[in-house]
Amino acid sequence: MKEFIKTIKDYAVLLNKCSTWHNSKDILAPIITEANTELAADCYIYEFYCYISIIVDLMNKYEIRFKEGKGAFKYKFPQAAANKAGKPMFLAQKNGQTQFQICAGTKINGLIDSEENHPDISFQLPSASDNPTHNDLIIIIDAKFSEQEGSLPKTEVYKFGMIIDLFELRGLPKDKIKFHKYEGFSANCLITNGKAYSDPSNIQLLQKYAMKEIEKFYPSNTYNIIG
Amino acid sequence: MSALAINTQYVDILPINNQSFSQKGFEGSFAINSALDQLLIKENDEIIIASPFQKDLIFISEGIIAKVNSINPIPPTQELITKRKLDGLPPPKETFSHNFKIKITKELETNNLLSDLEYSIKSVYRFNNPIVHFQQQFRSLSKQDYDTIVHGWVYAARTTFGKLINAIPRQNKLEFMLQAMDHFSTVDFRDIALDEGVVFLYNYIDRRILSRGRLLVATNKLIKDHLSDIIPSEEIGFFNPKTKQTNNLNLQASAFEDLFQLENKSNIIKFIKKSISEDSQLEQRFLQIFKNETWPIDLSI
Image (tube, rainbow over the protein chains, first blue to last red):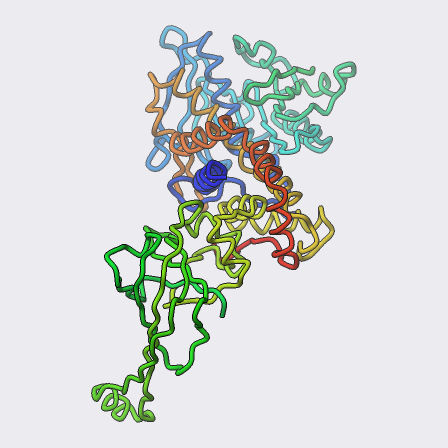
């Protein structure tokens, strides 16, 4: 019983420390209500895990440089979608020449003025400015977290298809991104830790919108690419 | 009163022999000051000596009231009489010093901190600061609570549930309660067994909090292992434009690493289940004691 008491006390102290951000009052798992169901899938922690995983993979094929942000954003990434200016990002280079920019949660102006969007990860041309438009995009990736590890909802897949269309990304990418282990990610991708929406035997919808689904993407898991 | 706890922060225990009140065989005396001329403390009542210990309370020894020595009236001081008069208040009444002789019969050594027993003592319900229940010269104890303390008996299911639920932020506690109400079709949890509650709670924590922790640990490792040449890995994190809070990834991931290490060492949920089932007789005893009690969730923490 003595060991039980010690373990449960130690565990509670650590759980208390972990469940609120260490140096702020933000709670780690914001509550999900009917009014903010999107919050459930748009988890910045998962998005950042996907972003860093991809950066590390690209290191095998490119020289990766870090571009600092400004002020509070010097080494800190925005916790929610934001404008590109002053935010940190990574650059993929070859022989000192930037091949493309890899941005997290950046606002992109689309074909239709009112329809801006913030893909979780965007691959942008080296010439892309701080106010990028769809013309600066190579491919986009969205990350969707599912606590229940369920399937991607139909609405998410359709929405992503619509964004691809609004960004005019249904054709061949403007550049070929060379991945290493993640070969097959070089397309517009919807990544999830849960399951894909599409059946691997019927990928017509994914082909129509030039997209792929990557399922079960989570630490220590084996992921599948569909599309 | 058949049992009471005496807090040495408010009561001086004076030795008659040369022993300490933590030792078996100690004999000594103490006095309680009260506005009452009669206290319900009798000869042969069982006593527990408790003392503050860091931010906790330690139950040091058990014994008995060997004798009710005397009750001495204490007239109010002249200073107090004058002060009350100046304040326009009625004159103060006399108080009483109740003197007792005690004998210590046993030193307490097992699970004898209040933080060990807070979820096993029925009269404790302020889990944000359980010591308040003992912050007085003495308090009466039910026979059941007295036995729990002197034996260091722990209600494993309730302790697990309480320690875990009261460790998470209030927002998550409320969310958990709503989900549990829905899951168990109840509004007050009284009829739902605590060990079922523990499993549901652990699943909630795993799904909502630990799943994010695993991501933080993995991301931090990727940064440390691969990117530390190009970025100061310990500085990386998030900035929340809404709250203007800066959240450091490395610090949070380190805390989760410690948590997962503890989980791996003990396989926490199996370990808890084993501890709960280990002494089923004791759990049955506590089930009876806490029969009509709801789950120990303190929303003030």
